[in-house]
Image 1 (cartoon, rainbow, N blue to C red):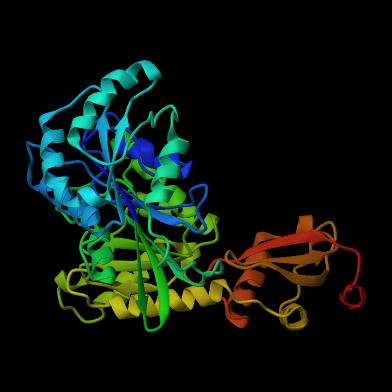
Image 2 (cartoon, rainbow, N blue to C red):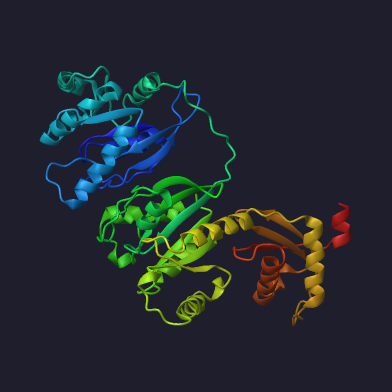
Length: 444
């Protein structure tokens, strides 16, 4: 683990993104944008295996309660890191730098001094003043322009002890959960509950989480990767550039997730943003479960959960297959059920159906409910194949696919879901043109 540490607005997130060659952390001139430590897997040139790179929050002299929490999380990562990159500005030294350096002195043996914003050799003369800090290794870089980044990477590789490192298997069967929902609905509380530690900062202030916070844990022998995302708000309320990028980052998280846990405050109910998240998730073929959080605070009324579930399924008419669960992230009620459901959804997403079994089922469905007559012509379903898993997709070859109505497509998708092991996940079904019969294609 390599941690990037320093005061706010010194370029930590820019360096993090530069090394990863992607925009994983939000970069903005506003001090204090990074609050939770952000992790990324980085394979430096010359290394046989990747390292975990961590972008930490900055340390401020004038701090409120939130800043104290940010500082606490940053120092925890510094303490656990194998190497620390202490980032300073080439010419601008502040009292915050002095305090950070003083506190970092105990970790001097595993610290590399990285002088940022040394955009040209002419700036190096001023940057040499940092030699007075007394660190063994010092390198001048420009994180924004990429100057001397290769030299920094080589230094990092040379400073790490690789003797105890073990390469991970390239194939992963971890269940990847994306925790999503409106701001202040309890996402970070659930993340911390799952990880058994305060990985994500929890506060009553909406919008506390701005980046995607990632963690890993095991439950009953199954590996999980969990992603806590920034809360999504209505576009009219997204006024800060930082929050705009936070929402974009949350949306991109769907590309990495298997299962989306949509958290809904049970006392507040649904919002248009919840519907937007669900559409984004299902469009990408992700499984969705609805978690009615803070259920322990709801009045104890008979059949209250059933009524809430029915209302939610009415609101999401096309999502009746998605599980709905009561939850209290704060005290842990319903967490085991949530994880059990996540495993079931993940297994459904990765289920493969034999072609012969699939086509036998299609014949039975057609015999049970024949395609409706069309005013201009009739169509016949010839053959079916499963074209993908996670997301789940099928293709059915038909004589005239263009006239197959939405109602019959929905019928086929529902039968695939109920009869072939995809009860609670979205199905993508494509109708393709074919003039061959089942028997002819099976011979091919």
